[in-house]
Amino acid sequence: MKYQPITLKKGKDSSLRRFHPWVFSGAIQKKSPDLKEGEVVEVYDNDGQYLGTGHFQIGSIMVRVFSFKKREIDREFWKEKLGHAISLRRSLGLIGNAQTNMFRLIHGEGDGFPGLIVDVYGSLAVVQCHSVGFYHIRTLLAELIQEELPEIIEAVYDKSAQAVPFKAELGAEDGYLFGQSQAWKGKEYGLSYEVDAEGGQKTGFFVDQRENRRLLGEYSQGKDVLNTFCYTGGFSVASLAGGAQSVDSIDSSAKAIELTDKNVALNFGEESRHQSFTQDAFEFLKDIHHKYDLIVLDPPAFAKHHKVLDRALKGYRKINRLAFEQIRPNGILFTFSCSQVVSADHFRKAVFTAASQSHRRVQILHQLHQPPDHPVNIYHPEGEYLKGLVLQVE
Ligand code: SAH
Image (cartoon, rainbow, N blue to C red; front, side, top):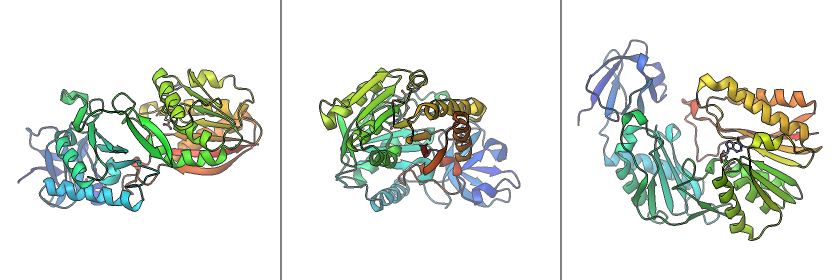
């Protein structure tokens, strides 16, 4: 099979040589005019030396490279690649684990699949294609997932409609690539969660907070806890399991609150320690005078691109300041940012500013990240998106 070549301008090959997987449009010297979005292409330097193979796409990133070795991109290739991703999760103890069976199987660039996310919730895998190239091979990917994990996977759901580039006009519709709809459930450190893959946000559950939820549980004994931006209530459930005296969950989405209530009931039945509120978190935080010992701030990505970075940092400063000002003495704050464009440094500065505005003494106890089933390609630091701080407020 011959793939269409793309030739780079002189001197534009260094990032690919360092295994960074993106080729920007400005780096391209020559390409065939009839390339179609999603097509497999081979990238060459200006002297005709092979650099990598990837999916062609339209936009400022024009190629996302998934192989730095020249070879046929066939079923065998994807099977081998998936095998690497599975073997990492196996070594992390996430496959066939009765206590924790919700994890990320493929984390885009971090796993050498630029443009693809696959999350596993018990016996369901949810595939989300962010590129046309992966969208075209979604059925093959589903088959391979089923073949390689026959002991756990019963269904694969495609949730790409909102993720694929809309300009590609693929007419993408979400649906099961195999298996059928049911009330999917999964476990995280022995706690049960119902996952609404079909109707929920992103792929249905934020598995990236697994270790941080567990840590929150360890801090929860006897505490009055506020969980803002609760979505499926993961932090609330972990905190109740950790012996919290009370937990209040806040989300602006009524559907999220419904999910939170369901997940609390699934683990604890009627639980008088838990209350939930469908409300804007900024509003709620305005008036929480000394009611809480432990506060979780896990907002959605305030900044999706660089242009809105300043506004996002303002948002982080504001919610953190509200929490610092009102948390009880010796309170503990778990504060997060999941915006890719907000660096750990930016985030820390925003939280630092908020702390100083509250005139309280603050100690950093933990610096938190995404877990190892969300690996970061060392040559693609953009993949390091989740940042968190655990702070004690005197
Ligand atoms: N902490 C969650 C994930 C949070 S996702 C977990 O562990 O799974 C972000 C959530 O913030 C979404 O559920 C969204 O509905 C909610 N949200 C967005 N803007 C909000 C606002 N202004 N006030 C309250 N909730 C908001």
